[in-house]
Image (cartoon, rainbow, N blue to C red; front, side):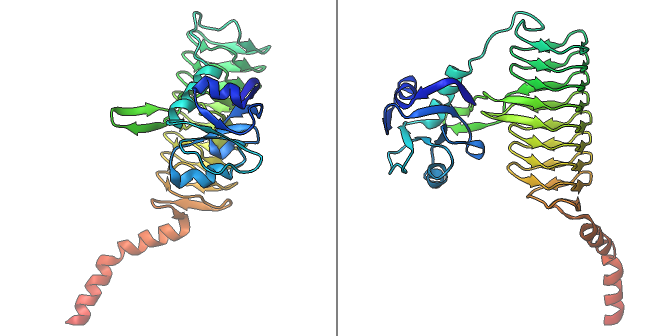
Length: 313
């Protein structure tokens, strides 16, 4: 998430009321999670296990809960609770704005696009040309939709990320300030849910087709010309490359990559990153030919046991 204008390190420290290490005029362009940070971004870290990863990341401002040696060319924000202060920054730079109409005055809808009754279109939404948005679709603030997109009834674009920190009093939500991006010629079925990024974008690539009742988690990037069948659940921060097929009831863990032109058969649990150009099946996931051979061999166990009994006799 980029700020509307470049901030200084001192200005950010004043917003969250914390100390800093570095030049007071050090430029701050935005804030992001560690997997999408760029120079000029703030990244937060609150556990020693991840200090080095954050300090050596592309981020040049590290919001951290301990004063450590600052890498050259970077700056530190020293906070007793980086998670809390990251939320404060999200609220400050991307606050929630109440809507008072079904279609916000700030929404931009391209020529030839049709919005069926009972849809909600939030602030700063951009919808391209010749789109068809069926009834009861909710499109949250800042969503961007390309041309020739079809979205079926009941789908929700831009709900919050499922991202929590466990505290003694309960779960504390990491606020979502990102967006959903739907590229040209995408088809999205009924009752799908596509969550916005925490600070970045959840992206559905050009020409991808999504069946009914599919969930896509925060910050996931789906490539071009993918096919995703019904009741598939895709976790956050997943990269699905071009022309991947996911059949019904596939589930994934977070932070993995599915290679281009991979085919994942129904009811498979994608528990790790997988190479493209192959077919996969089962939980834990394996190449489908190998998995089906294993299942065939399992069926032969009674026969093998009987043969062993006969040999013993």
